[in-house]
Figure 1 (cartoon, one colour):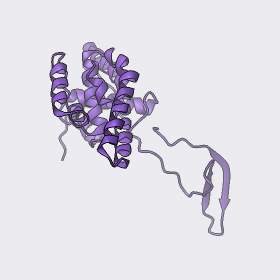
Figure 2: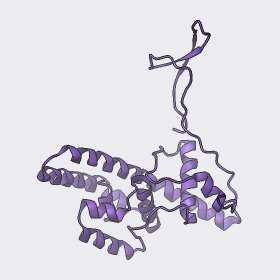
Figure 3: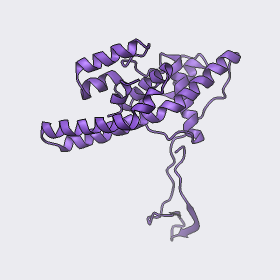
Length: 225
């Protein structure tokens, strides 16, 4: 799994503490005073909550496959989230550097950090975990792992790592496609449940899709009107 270290170069609800204090003005409008915020508010903005269907399985084997996929997804999602964060911070930093020599030194420094920090952990991933990670990196960054390596290293290295990965049945070019691939929809289902249960910290995906439309297609066998 050595090739995966290079791509890392790159709350269900708003938590607040509400004081039981209501102020009324001459128009009898009630205001909420939120701890840590000196500005009275008339309402609280909450994060969107996705309503999830009840899980149903055709047989025991199907249930076991889902649980195995769940375990692997929960394991590798933090790496994909970290890749998106590293990529964002790196691009921000690179945009502030004017000389190419400065950019090369900074990129090399980040690569060495990632290699020393995460390479041993990534080596422990199984083939299927590695492929799920590749998909989730695309979900979080909007770019395939292959293109990230190509951009950050060079085209030959991207080709080489993809060829090496193919020997283990892993494609760095694999995109996250819950619209056309049912396994990817199941991964999304697992993520949404983990976000709501507090098992994973949510991070907005870089690619957009409607989870309800996906559920209608894969679970209820409905086609969009």
